[in-house]
Image 1 (cartoon, rainbow, N blue to C red):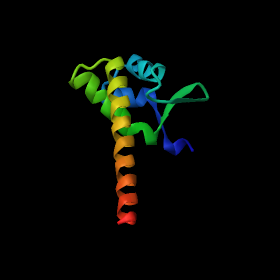
Image 2 (cartoon, rainbow, N blue to C red; image 1 turned 135 degrees about the vertical axis):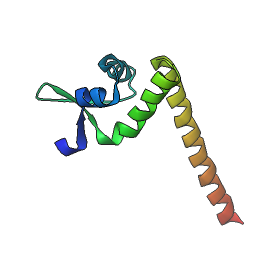
Image 3 (cartoon, one colour; image 1 turned 30 degrees about the horizontal axis):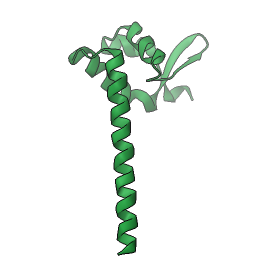
Length: 95
């Protein structure tokens, strides 16, 4: 299990990210942090999103609240695209 977890402190050092930024993301519910033996970890499945949030925050100067809004909009777009795909399949079956 620990092979699927990334130590947040090491991630921050390697990527030059402030640990407070990770805490802010966690507080907004954008990432989930696990604590094992007093060490904070992020699951590897969240790494893609975390890397994206880091780019938005540091490269584009988007604050955490803005990141939350953007992520919610992207999630809605994804849901709508899935719904469109489902509806197209239903139409195809009717024709």
